[in-house]
Amino acid sequence: MAGGKTILIAGAGPAGLAAALELARRGFSPRIVDDGDGPAPLSESRALGINARTLTLLSPSGVTETILAEAQQIAHFRARSTTRQLFELDTSKIPGRFSALHGLAQGATERLMIAALVSYGVTPEWNTAVQGIGLDRNKPEVTLRRPDGSIETVQVDIVIGADGAHSVVRKSIGLGFPGEALEASFYLADFRYSKPIDSHFAEIRLFDPGMVGRLPLAVDTLRFISTLPDFESRIAHPDLDHEKTWSSQFRIHFRHVDRMSAGNVFLAGDAAHIHSPAGARGMNLGIEDASWLAYLIAEGREQEYSALRMPAVKQVLKQTYGLTRLITMKNPLAVALRDFAAPLLLRLPSARHYLLRGVAGYDTPKPPWIDWAE
Ligand SMILES: Cc1cc2nc3c(=O)[nH]c(=O)nc-3n(C[C@H](O)[C@H](O)[C@H](O)COP(=O)(O)OP(=O)(O)OC[C@H]3O[C@@H](n4cnc5c(N)ncnc54)[C@H](O)[C@@H]3O)c2cc1C
Image 1 (spheres, rainbow, N blue to C red):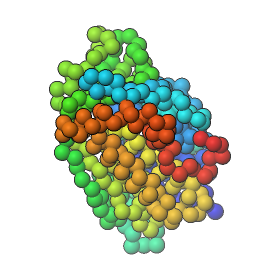
Image 2 (cartoon, rainbow, N blue to C red):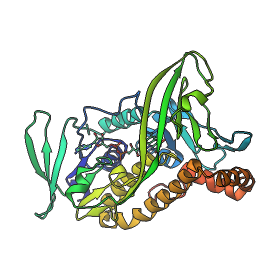
Image 3 (cartoon, protein in one colour):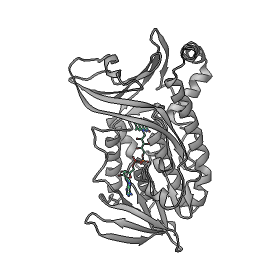
Image 4 (cartoon, rainbow, N blue to C red):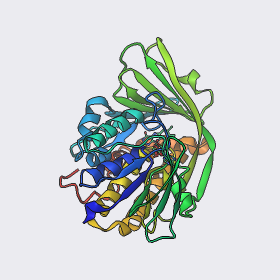
């Protein structure tokens, strides 16, 4: 019986929680453990863009409804050069149930997923780390460090490694993480305003060189993300009365595994692929991996997972890489050509449609278990 399989999920980030939810609603009782002491802090949100595909995937568990009650619809996306507006996209104009993109702090999304998971009788075990996985026996053997420091060893039918970019699961099963790190650093700062601001549009301002992106995080909070260390001096704040709630600096890596499983150990999310935040795909792609994996496990077809997911992963990484190169280019000639060509290209309905489908996450295969047109 499929629901009788013992499943251990390493990591209660978005990918691990999506796997647990999608398994639990199909009658499985997965065990989900996390090294941390709770969901991501609300004030230190990495992901904020939730695409329409994720809303589709989280609908059957009821999470989508709760996300829509809290999230900001990002109805417009604008791009500007130093001198003019390059294009504007109405992201609500995509056929289907959901508009292309919503904004919500990753910690808030995780909390809504945990609440739904608990209603299925599954609670993440915090402060519990996977230390290693043995593949010598007929079932994977997982070594766990419990909150009191004691060690527990368990044998399970299936292990899902959703333990992030530095995945212990990935290393334990001997999979590499080839790819490259970009030279450019990215900077971000979140600002909370004393009164509500226009939280329904996202904007990217392209300088020569460099960029500053503006993304709504809440009714009174904006995120600015940039390739320029001095970007804060270029921000046009909608309200002078504001406080900086978080800032960070990071380098961008493009990496993915060559296969997403070894035996009955499977990888999902950042454990299997990492890329730039351009396009807001990372968390969404991880939720999609996990949802596919749960579906295939329920069908008894989990060995097809890697072959089914790898093309989608490679495609999204390739697009994100192209987008990142476009917004980080430094050569003045290339910058001028980009700023000249982008508005012309995006006058074409087919180009707008292509871009919008990518933002919505509809450019990867439609989940076969969803019985409505997205
Ligand atoms: C600045 C920035 C902006 C971003 N914006 C977006 C966006 O708008 N949209 C989007 O889709 N994505 C975005 N991303 C990417 C997104 O944050 C990640 O892709 C996403 O968090 C990955 O989810 P995950 O569950 O795979 O991994 P994680 O969120 O990293 O979760 C992994 C979990 O595993 C736990 N863990 C680690 N090691 C162990 C262990 N040994 N044992 C047990 N547990 C362990 C960790 O505590 C953690 O809770 C952004 C990233 C950055 C840096």
